[in-house]
Image 1 (spheres, rainbow, N blue to C red):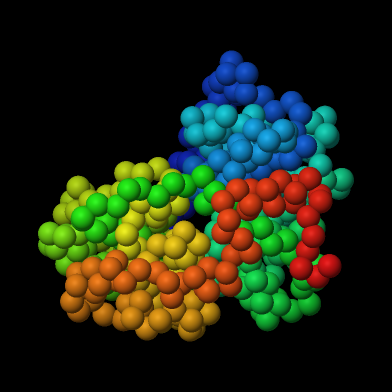
Image 2 (cartoon, rainbow, N blue to C red; image 1 turned 90 degrees about the vertical axis):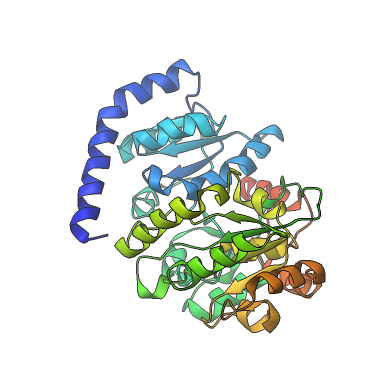
Length: 377
């Protein structure tokens, strides 16, 4: 996608968001969904194109509400607020004014503000004194974005496990490791595996193209067509295709390829709303260096990984589970499904502080309440 096209799309989205503001504010009031009191809030400034980053945290925080926590969501885009009314039962506050946001958080007696990305508006919100500022991110992976120097700005940083601690210690100069809180992956606590059948269900979940060469981890342009063609032709395989929500957002070539793949393989597109649940329902997953690969480890789903970038995952994962080419792919997938994922179990313990159901959510609750312990203590 050209720079002009991206700018035009951003301008159009801003216009739509401004036009939607009065109606969205009325909807929030009419639905009795106003954020009045919240000890903890999820802060999200982005438009709906980025909402997947927030969406993965909604269910874990809804479970915290069931456990007695007072939680809400603060957004700065009207279209995002409108989408959230359908996605979650959490109370919502919407405003484009950071001053109004701060005033509402004062009256709501908010003690912790949680962030799911490193958007620029986060750093305006960080000026607000009083509450703790907690960075959650939206997944565990070894992408370069996981070791941003911006993490220094937060009071606490939630990470999945020991691997993230090592990664940050080795990469971010002068980072205070006492800020890190190991919580595992709360998003995985609610997923349930399906009953296995004779057909091998394979999930191909490539990541997006990234916004720079350092973030270009996707297999879709180079191997995607071959992967889909071979798996769709294998009678013993049930193929599900789940491209990243941002696929094609920065690359015209990727956008065209995805449109072509939608026409050719539309019947194989994954319809499961929750990506973690889709993983749990799979017998094998094929993906790139992305949160999906690491979640597959935590859920003990056999992983076939694309990616030659230096990483602990490519270093530690057996070579038989690394996708360098697509030769005889169908047979390799069937053999991996039969062999299982025993070799991944040590990796799950390395990348995740816990994979015990409900424990990660409990750790999240302790973190937002201020009762967790950092690895430096």
